[in-house]
Length: 346
Image 1 (spheres, rainbow, N blue to C red):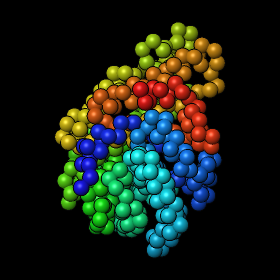
Image 2 (image 1 turned 90 degrees about the horizontal axis):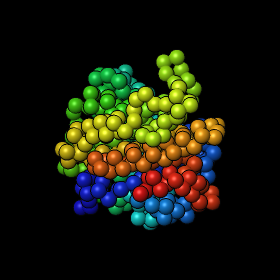
Image 3 (image 1 turned 120 degrees about the vertical axis):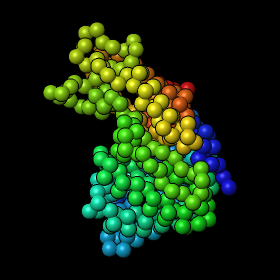
Image 4 (image 1 turned 60 degrees about the horizontal axis):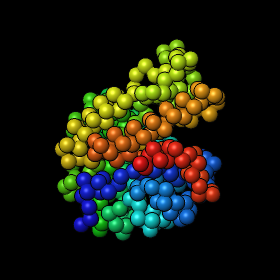
């Protein structure tokens, strides 16, 4: 057998998402959200840039028959081709069902539980069978960011995860021991601590990982306009606050939050032998800023990425940066943001 979950996590030091590509919906094409097709050369460039793992967000539902849930063989073949690129580059690679129009992630509810488990089983039987012969560097992940806020919804999500595990294992071969990843509720740290009190059953021990995402504080990482309940944060971290634009300095969610939140995942999972994937993290680049504000913001963004990546690794978590083409240029295979890249891979 290949590496256990703990051993695999130790080898995946820093990962990159190839975002807004295979998971693009609405056009039945990986290019429909504006990114080019993934090439072998680009995957080799990811490896050369300092990453040793890739997360492949992937959609499936738009390529499947609505009645039979049969996935178009051409799409299965294409995903297999991209996985082969990753394995050939000696990258660990995670394949998931990523939002996918929301059929599962927006419906962790009892009224959809039976139908969604049927589709979850059908999809994973096909995905796992298609990719069964890859070695242990390939991992599967049940979902992306399942929208779960209550214990009732959590119970439904756990049934989806159990169906995923059972379906993959039943396909046999290397899937009998392949490492699998299950998501916490909304991949939110606090909700995961509160609601994920149980754990799925697996016929093969030591082969499961947990997944959370880290976009704290959202005011800094994703918020795009000031609201009545709070302002955007343009700046982040010690030494990066503005003395003139104090309205956009952070009031919460800085270094202490990184240590508290990620440290709690170490206690909850890692210390019990369950590795944790930080499947996504990152912060928007506010290019409309100018002068000193832009300088401080860009320094903040680099420091944020460095802090989350380094503290993740210190706690035994595996960080995967969310990139949709602003870090690495996928057409020319060049680095677009050397400071962030250095922060991630240092």
